[in-house]
Structures are given as structure tokens and as C-alpha cells.
Image 1 (tube, rainbow, N blue to C red):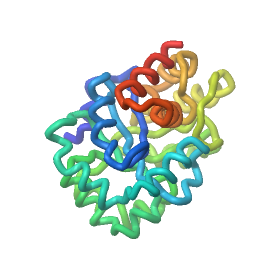
Image 2: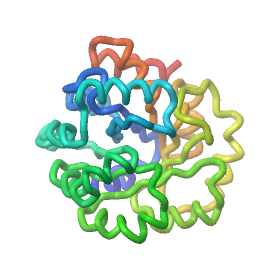
Image 3: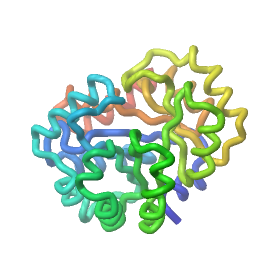
Length: 256
């Protein structure tokens, strides 16, 4: 069974997933970041593939992507860094990136490499569902890679149910239609969270975009299986020389 399915079978609530940009702050930080996150109990990690035009991302992740590219990060380099990762890392790993660099690398090549190094799934926010079903799903299935789709407050019920039907892992529930970034409170999102919970979806949900403190984390855990944290971690990574310290600061901030 895929590690993503194993995680959600074993743990239904309070899952904590963290996103970071590969090659940031330094080119060779990818594996040390993974080790530090796993050592502190993070349940799942999303490895961001830097891209020159990350349209869904806020300024913090955009800047990390820009720096990673300047550092020399590429998909080929990333797979090289991850070659022996399963000797050290046992938690689920998900690649997150935009379609353009994945297509330049070659989608089947990308899936084959994900399978080779032990990546469990992928998130490609700008890949339409219709294209996925027609061209990409058979390839992803061939390599046992879970494809994770995003829903937002604007996503229609029909679309949500279609995503749920063709998903076998989890659904990435975006807290708002805005770009990524930290929020102080999710009180205005309760109606949206409740609406999704009434749909009786078969897949668990993780909520991302804005989780950064105790209030937002508790709200997310109340309404879904857990949280995805991105900008808050990227910010702490940029502020501390030691990766271990950055992870500790992130976890401390989630208690405040």
C-alpha cells in the first residue's frame, strides 16, 4: 500500500504536513530539511519544485523559489538528491510543482523517477482534471503515484465530487481563494469548512494556505484530518541558519 494511504489508515486526525522548496535556503538543504522534519514528528512532507512563475504562491514561497533556482536547483538535481532518501526517511513524500517544468522533464520520466526514489504522490495545481483523466492518470497509476487535487471555497459541489471520485490519497483543501501566506484566524472560513464536511466525501482532507499559529491549527484540526504548512516554515527557514532551529521555531509558533 502507498505510504499516503498507510498514514491516513493509521492516523485519522491531527496530521501535520509541511511544505518546503527544494534547494532553499541552500542547494543541498533538501535532505537535511527532510531529516529535521521527520525527526520532529511531521507526518507528511511536500517537496516544492521551484518554478520561475509560481502563480498560486504568495511572496514568501515565490522568493524561496527564486532563490532555489538561483542556487541551481532543477528537477534532475532534486531526483539526484533523493536517490537514497528511503534509507533515511520513512514518512510519505509528495512532489508539488507546476505543470511546465514537469512537462519539460517528461511526465512519464517524472513518474518513473518518483517511483525510483520513493516519492508517494504529486500535486500539480495547474493540471486540469480533464487532462489528468485523459492523459496523465494511467501513467501515474502505472507507478503507484497518488495524484492530489486542490479545492477552494469557489469549487462547485459537482467538481468536488469529481475530484473525490478520482482521488485515492487525500484532498488538499485550500482555506481561501487567495495566494499562499499566513493568517491569524480562520473564523471566516467555518461555513466553508462545514459545507465540505456535509458532503460525505470518501477521501480525507488536509487544509492549507494560512496555517501559522495555534488558533489556525486548532480550527483546521477540528474540521479536517490535519493541516498543511508552507509559508510559515519557509519564513522560519530563511530567518535561521540552522535547519533544526527553524523546525523547532515553527512547532513552537504553532503552540502560540
